[in-house]
Image (cartoon, rainbow, N blue to C red):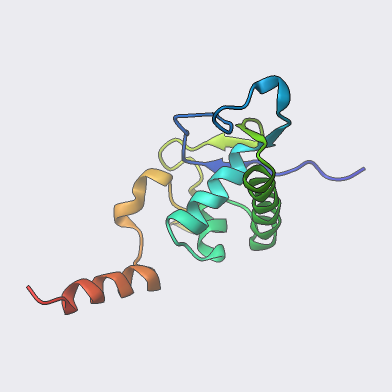
Length: 140
């Protein structure tokens, strides 16, 4: 018997949960389901530009698991775009993060990944440093 799947931390609630090509009736479309954790992986890695290691820490999963989630999400999005299918965002094995629920106290220190809402307190990544250096190099 396989061990139970670990729940993934999700920090984003999309405004729209359904997409379809314009001008095509729903009865003519096949629907693809993108899970909430797949959407969160896409958001962290592609929209926010985090490396997989950092994104996996934010989702509270291993980097290899994040890679599998991204691979699945990429194939679903490609199928949706190329074949003109409907896409619904629903389901998945996830939990919504509430301020610092994942921090644990070990040896007098807080260990674990930060809450989704603590972005301003996180350490600068190499992407953040590159963006900051580009802003400083621009003529005023």
